[in-house]
Amino acid sequence: MTSEAKRDLIVTAVASLIVIMMFSIFHLVKLINDSSKEQIKVGFVYDSDESTPYTANFIKAQKALERQLGSKVVTVVKSNIYDRDGGKKAVSELVNEGCDLIFTTSIGYSKAAKEYAEQYPDIQFCQATGDNAGTEPVLDNYHTFMGEIYQGRYISGAIAGMKLRELIDSGRISPDKARIGYVAAYETAEVISGYTAFLLGVRSEAPEAVMEVMYTNTWSSYAVEKKCAKQLIADGCVVISQHSDTTGPAVACEEAQNVYHVGYNQSMIDVAPTTSIISSCINWTPYIVSASEAVLAGKRIEDYVQGDENGNDLGAGFDLDWVQMLELNSLIAAEGSADKITELTDKFKDGWNEVFKGSYTGVDPTDPNKTIDLSGGYTENEHSSAPTFCYVLNDVITIVEQETDARIR
Image 1 (cartoon, rainbow, N blue to C red):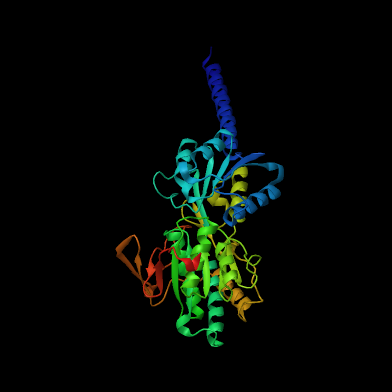
Image 2: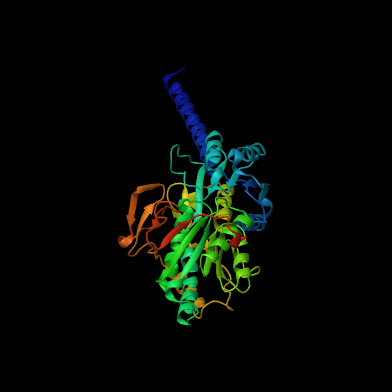
């Protein structure tokens, strides 16, 4: 073979090799970029069912997802999953049923969800109210999310404060009787942050107000919640609010009469038409729908979903409709309440975050040596979607124990 022929052969071989390499690279890039799916299977783990407002709000989001994505999504639901095994069995079943995306909706499931996320990197796991997305191991397929509910709590408090102001100014109660009660589930940052925001909202309109808090040590017990509310009413509280999951406190107020109520997760005006003023809730729909669209499109969830991002954690408030105020009972609300809701909602939408600020000091109930001075303010949800404020304010908040007493039966 002549040297010229050898050269031509080498050139041809190199050219062929380049074509093959370019073809391979093209298909590899296409494969990487074209990770979208025609249909996804989405699993939900619920600690209850539609009978409780907390789970009912997630089911609303699930139904919205089914309506908006239609045949592009198949949903699988595990309901009434209690925390005995941390949700492991339910999550395992959803994995084995071929889910592409799994939403776990109680913080009690967060450990199990993250463990399964580590084992199954091709499945996306989204934990509501969780706080462990940023802890080791940090996983690309494990996410946390929550609405910035302190905003709704504060506005609810302001509306309750306006009612207190009305009661005081009309002479129906004296300023020293401006006492509110709060039925709280557990002594956690989420709950403490919520009732503190509520009280600070109340005191923005009625600075005389003080608050008694009673823990139920359960998320959902109508009997216990109602009993706690009745004890707070017997102690002289004229407004009752709650971070618990049934209408028990609302019914207690309606039965007592002349004691007003502020709810959570659902409007409770239907069961307490003469006493329940307003409620607030987290709207889970924006995240659940958008996260599902991200998985369908093969996109990173945090790159696709709008919200305040901290790694694999997302939150938002009124600005993106992640927090909502529910129906105002105009028959009993103080004059100007509707305008106040609009005013404060607009402030939050504009980025206002000075709820936890004032001449207050507080103590961490889990560590008496850990204190806070709010004169400089505390920025809630600055680094996470889950609330982090965990101090009981001195002088204005009192923790009371449940009693066994004939007067509250």
